[in-house]
Amino acid sequence: MKLEKILAANMAEAMIKVKNELGSDAIILQTRRVKRGGFLGIGAKIYVEVTAMQEDVKKPSVSLQREQPIGQESTSQLKMELEDIKHTLKSVNDKLLSVHTSGRFPEPFEGIHSKLINSGLYQSEAASIVEGVAQNMTPIEARDKTRLSKALKVRFDDMVKTERVIFSASQKAIVVGPTGVGKTTTLAKIAAMMKMKEKIPLTIVTLDTYRIAAAQQLKTYADIMHIPFKVVYTPQEAEEISSSVKDNLIIVDTAGRSQKNELKITETFSYVRSIKPNLIFLVIDATKKRSDVEDVIEHFSLMSPTHVILTKLDETSSLVGILEALKNSGLPLSFVTNGQNVPEDIMYADEVNIPSLLVQEVLK
Image 1: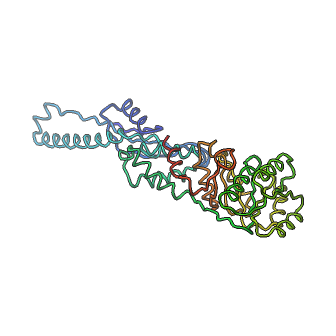
Image 2: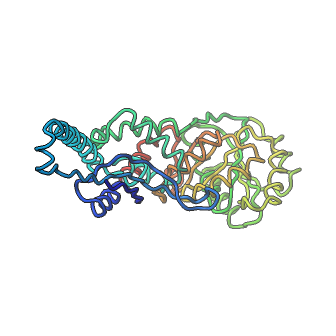
Image 3: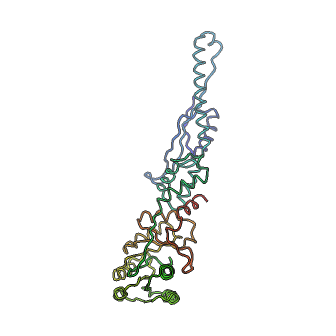
């Protein structure tokens, strides 16, 4: 009898090694996943360890059979029992080989797990979603794409938190965020919605005096829509305008600030305190990596944002990680934008079937 422990990257590779080293009649005694490598447990990889046995049963000699007839019956019984064990273990091996187990889950769940991680989820987050789906269906049932889509959509429903903002006159709203996320265009879209659809009287204010083109662009939009427009240069002016404008919705644009520049963020916050807005919208670019989005949320938390606006939805193919970051922040998603056209390319977030978009992303 020969006993071997085989280490391999996955079960399929392990079976090939077992066959090469112990032959096709080898018996699998145990399989388990083990960690190897790394430093102090960090960076270790998961392998499959298979314990297998090569059984060598010799036929009894003729002389032994003649001298010990009773022993012959006992040996035959033992051989039959060993054959039964082999047959049972072979059946288990065949079932293991029929399922692709290169990762943590059988297919198609492992493919979904990998897609979720590639889309920005952490290992534990991706595993939680896949485990939730796998509890309600077998791998074979999951090959039905319609059924799998419905199960995933249920899981993604919990990831997306939306909240429709009801604007009214006498409110003050301000948009903040990093450079290049589309704050000015987004503000113009919201202003157009309030003016043309909601018929709410409003005034547009800009604090962005660093870029002449930005103020001019917003003034052009305001002129076209016949909306009062004001430029503010100091926190004191911001407070005066905020107090003097009555019975109007005031929407305030701010200069883009890198989340790394805490001094500039603090400077913008001084204006926010002067205006005392009811609504603070943090504008986030949907094309950014999850880590960047988390960094933005962390550094702009000084502003105490009330809602998030997600821009450039038409320019990204990966939303899962970003929405998980929003979920963890507790901030509701109020608007999404999907283009540069004013006022068309903006929607209330609750009008968009975001879970379906996430299903398409994972199953494409």
